[in-house]
Amino acid sequence: MSVLAIEDAHRQFASGGGIVTALDGVSLALDRGEIVGLVGESGCGKSTLARIAAGLDRPDDGKATFGSRPMAPAGRQIDADTRRRVQLVFQDPLASFNPRRTVGRSIALPLRLNRMLSGGQERSVVAELMDQVGLDPALMDRKPHQLSGGQLQRAAIARALGLNPDVLICDEPVASLDVSVRAQILNLLLALCRDRNIGILFVSHDLGVVRRIADRVVVMYLGRVVEQGSNEAVWSAPRHPYTRALAASVPTGAASWRLDQGRVRLAGEPPSPFDVPTGCRFHPRCPIAIDRCRQDDPVLRPISQDIDAACHLAE
Ligand code: SF4
Image (cartoon, rainbow, N blue to C red; front, side, top):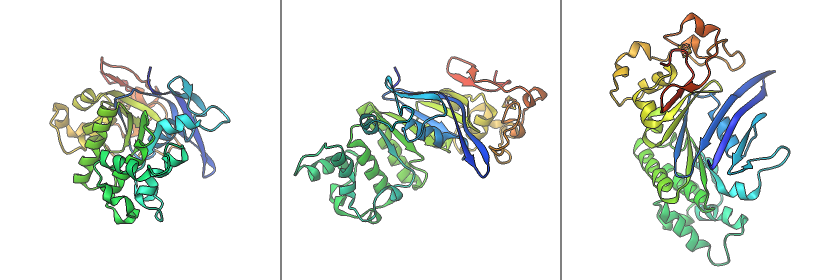
């Protein structure tokens, strides 16, 4: 059984006098010891899905479960045990720390709130957590602004690990970091997944970053999953034109389909979520759209052993 599962989630928001559909029938499963990369442009619904996976929001329809129990039953907050076992790492580590509290005190705070620290233990436990993420424990008495972005993201991961989670939801965790630091944080997450058997949902707009870290990749467009599969399969032979366009913008790799740049270039902005196109919602930007695409909405279906895609021409 997956440690975390979202089934047929629908989510709408009222915005600017209209209704935005953030999720339109999205399913996702995460096992322990695997990294699922969730990728797509801004506004595709991936952050809404991440919030539901973290129990911070709930779908209007569909369900989210942690193990065998609902993440956040209707009308109730997420329970304390699930809250402890599903932890979040955010894009901007500086914004996730109290500027007046030392880094060590911030790392210790969730442990104290969950009564997982006894008197006199705090500094040794925090030092051990910092050590596990490659952060010098001597930094525990510094304030957040005295650490670099990479050091602070390590501290954020240490804070999440203190509660011994089964799942980490990482929302654009390296987007604000320099390239060299980015690689270190990705390596750290890979090691944590492997060594502690943690399931990681890694949210990113950058397929190149996801490619480096994920076991499986889920690609979203305008509130839907349009392609999903093993990292290797999605990268080496993506079946959906949108995934091809994302992959073609990554400046590495030499798969043969990449040579056909004219047919994979992503043009224009995503359509307004207030006015979702008929038929395939990608058709206004799709370089290979046919007449059928303007009327028939493609469903997500198995294309090969390793890939599902929502495209009439995926074969
Ligand atoms: S269904 Fe048509 S418009 Fe949509 S991605 Fe496939 S080819 Fe393009």
